Length: 497
Image (spheres, rainbow, N blue to C red):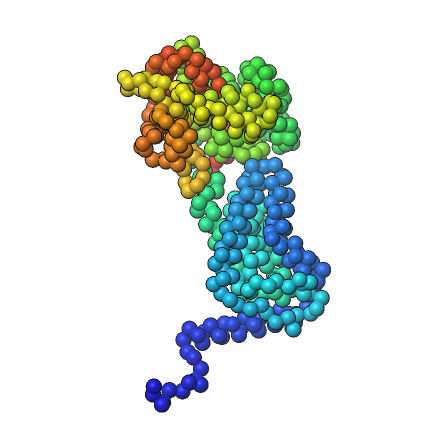
C-alpha cells in the first residue's frame, strides 16, 4: 500500500452522491417535522392507521363498486389487483433489499406520532406504494373515479412523513413502485379503453334530441329498473316499455311498428331477440346493457346510459356484422357466439339445477356431470369425414386475446366467423383447458381455429344441443353458418376526430 494514500479523505463518486442525497432527505424530514400543518392533526394520523393492511383501500373499492356501473366495478377490481402486486413486491423485494432504519422521532411532535410504531425497515414506504397502486389502477380504468380517489391516496402518502415513520424518499420510492405495479397489471390485463372497438363502418342515422322517436323495451328479469329510470331522466322524450321475459318478443314487435329507433335493455339473449326484430323491420338498434355479461354492448363500446344517450342525441352509429344459422326449419341470428357440444350441455344442466341450488353451484355441478360423461356430446361431418368433437365454437367476428384478459372482439365488422374446434378424445377437461390456453394459436394437438365467412356441417345427430347468445335449442341433420356483413346498424358513441 502506498504511504501517500489518505484513508481519512472523503469518498468520491457514487458513495458521495448517495451520502449527500441522504443528508438532503434527512433535512427535508426535519423541515416537515418542524412545520405546522393546518388541519392535519386530527386527520392524517387516523388516515395513516386506516390504511394498515389495505383496509382503507378495500373499503374504498367496495364503495366504488357499489355505484353498480361496469366501469366502476372494473376500476375497483383493477385497483385491488394493482395494490396486491405492489404489496407483494414491497414485502418480498423492497423491504429486504434496502435495510434502512426508521427516522428518529425526536423532531416530531408527540401528538403526531402513531401509537404503535412500525417495526419493519423504512425503505420503501408500503403505505405509499399501496395508495399509489390503488389510485393509479382505478384511474387507468376510470379517470373520473381516479380523480376522486387521488386526494385520499396523496393524503395517505403524506401522512407517513407527517407521523414520522418514513423519510420523504421512502414515500416517493413507494409511490413510484405502486404506480409501476398498476401499469404492470395493465400490461397483463389491458383496460377496456385499450381494446376499444374501431368506429367503423359509420352509419347515417337520425339524431334523437331528448330521445324522441326511440321506443326501448326493457326486460324486467335482468334487473333493469335502475337503468330504465336513468334513461328516462337522460332522454325524457323516449318511450320505455318494461315487461316480463315471456312478453319481450311481442313487445319488441309492437315497438318496432311505431319506432324510428328500436331500443332494448337486457342481457345478451334479450339483445339477440331485439336484433332479429330490428333486422326484419329495417330499423337501427339502440342497446343499453342490462344483463350480467353484456358481451355485445361492451364490445360495441356502450357501457351505460351516458354512452347510449350521447350516441342517440348526436346521431352516432356504426354497421356491424350478424351471424346467421340455419338448421332444417330453424333459422336464427347471433351477435356474439354460436356453439355445439359441451357448452350447450353445460347450459342445459345448469338451468336444470339453478332454481334448486343457485347459479354458481349449479354451474359447478353441470361442469362435473358433463365432463365426466363417457360419450362425446357432438359428432359432425367436417370435410367429408365424420369425427367426434367436444366443442365447436363460432364467434360473430374474430376474438382476440391481449395478455391474460378474456377474448374480445376489436372489430365487429370484419366479415368473419371465428370458428374453433376442440377435437374428441380422452380427458375432455384437459383438452378444453389446453384449447382455452392456446388462445389465438391456430393449431394445437386438441384445438383448431380458422376464420371463414361461412361453414357447413352435415350429419348432426338428432337431439344435438345448439347454443346461440345464451339460448339453447335442439337440432339435427345439416347446419349452415354464415356471416352477414354490416347487416345491422347500431348506435354507439364515436371518438372525436
